[in-house]
Image 1 (cartoon, rainbow, N blue to C red):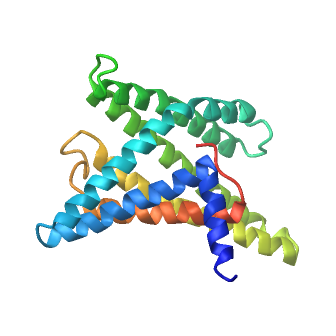
Image 2: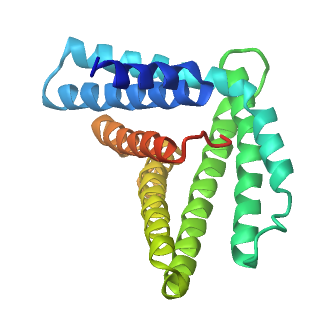
Length: 232
């Protein structure tokens, strides 16, 4: 009976699209971490198999994201210009973040379609644009979390003890979000098809897997805390 709780939680997670995507993402990067680690030491059939599995899981997520445009649009539409936000800086950071996310999807779709030979286009340019938009979204997300942390710190002295506890939990969530975004940003720069720009193309497979696994586990933890999925 004790094992039924975690098992039921995992099943419930896999029953939702966002939950399944988070699990697949974690497995994708974990396989890359394991495969990259094995191959960094010696040639390994298991390591190559893990990297191949990681590539297939990544491709699976790319195909499934073909259907994310409408949900992202609905989220952006509901937020609008963020007039419900009292802080102007936070409002515009959120709006720009939504714009970057919204543009990311069609760019990635074109890149995927070009690679699949569905359309005739230079997939390299579209992959570069989609990766750049992802990186911009991550930087905007980091700036947004830093702004929220600054506001929480400034208003903490005015809160009751119970409110201070809630503020502390929110601050921890924002701090974890920053760590997650920084890990993803490191990978985003690595995947830019621009050799010589920062560390583009220079990160070993095990490091990409480690950063991605860290980000994925944080995402699963934050989703568990909030009890809901994000817009994208």
